[in-house]
Length: 394
Image (cartoon, rainbow, N blue to C red; front, side, top):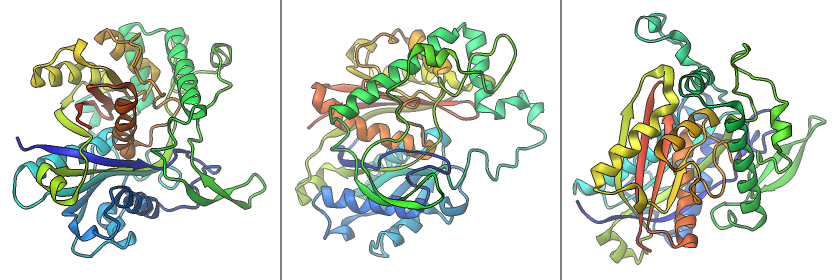
């Protein structure tokens, strides 16, 4: 395999989807275009955009302003040269990291691509969860038809694997605590592009606001406040999944720059991270959330590595139920650098963006902690899991 690196990264703040989203009045393609231009500026290629061989953006539920092949549409809206092709990748929750793998694979083929912008964008205010979905009426012939509801699958994981409500609430509390601490200490400052927007106000108007942080972090969260929340997806006496111990729906964009060793030398780019393993797996859709527990051991074996070699674990919190199970099963639930700056429950889970957001955060975490290896993983809707191994080379 050729030497291929991530050389730069950037993301927006993560807005909480809904009528009060900070990005309610910012289109998804415009949000992606802002991040793309900032990425090139940070890489010192603001005046050399023609060097790009392509743009690959992740996204899902591709309608409204997420439609029209947003990967290509964002190239146009960013003012990039028309010669730069763009495409959109949809692997649901892992779309953003899938784009990075696709970029690495394309460059590795040696067919002329040496520099690719990869990332993800999701606007769940403009395209709410499930909008436009027309589920096959025969789904029940192949799996439980209720498996199309992600919250229901989280309840199934909790029940099958004995994940208690208290365990779930504790993970949620820890997530908000870590994300708030990281924000206060300025750890996200360098990875976030400040964006001025017309943010909604309670009276129906708007106000100018610079978005340079994440909207969904709740520093006031306590175990007591979480315990008072009612289950959302099921209402029987076994129900444990609440809005408090589940990820949010969000609006955000993130992007990374992927380059060959030769292109780095030519343009004076500094390699920072290297993808040394990637694996997507399928699991029973009823227990969708177990994906990371399946994918991570496979990708480690693929790379010839062991668990104790990993310095940072970023296992997305789609639901505390599945994240608790996966990290417990892997023996990393109490690892000191498990989601050290929060995850989906606190920062948010903007579906098609999440994989690129995590890679962006890892680029800063790995340098700060002096980490050599990190794992990024997430469960994926309809029964999948993805895991990637990063090596710090900066």
